[in-house]
Length: 302
Image (cartoon, rainbow, N blue to C red; front, side):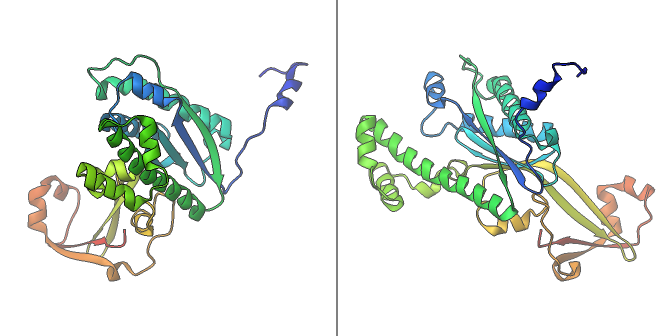
């Protein structure tokens, strides 16, 4: 920007930099998606194609912006977690939120036909967003646990609500019927009145979707020289992210330390014949001089 007497107006801009080491989360939600769902006649309480479209948009976000390492979503919302040392948009919340929301909305419209080939997109979807900072990975994981608990609560209620509506009750009567009911009572309602076992419903409906860069490490250990290999890919999982076991299995997501045990104490060990391995990839022998036998091990604590 050229220097001029008008440059003082920059002093009125809001400073919204998120200071490190706080972790940044961007949560987006569909704006007025009740109307959007009704106009496009999406299946209630869950439209599998619509949920997969959301997952595909989240995947595109991670592909486009490497600083985003994890996301979790259900229904019409998604949360995106930036890596701890991210300098994306110089950590300015407004810039981060605006680019995530605009890109997600654009991809949603572009990919619509991939998931609804026989439905016209009658008007563009709209999402709002906010940035929240969390001072530790423990609190961040509590945030994600809160969202997954909400997923379960909302899905259980909506499943009961829409089954009652489809059985002939008005929306008001269905709301009154469910008022004050507990989780077990809702499960019994589904089982006794509609022959539905809630726990057999698709996992994506009950637990939401986690989209993240999954790092897979493999160690080829030769007799005299071990070699580390790893690759990363974006995966979509429908799993329990509340339990600590998920984060222990994927420590690279939040850059948490790996198991401190001696690798040989927590690894599965294989002895592979060189001749068998060459049947799979004979070209490798032209580049490497292998011993007759290869010791291969993969950590069990990953």
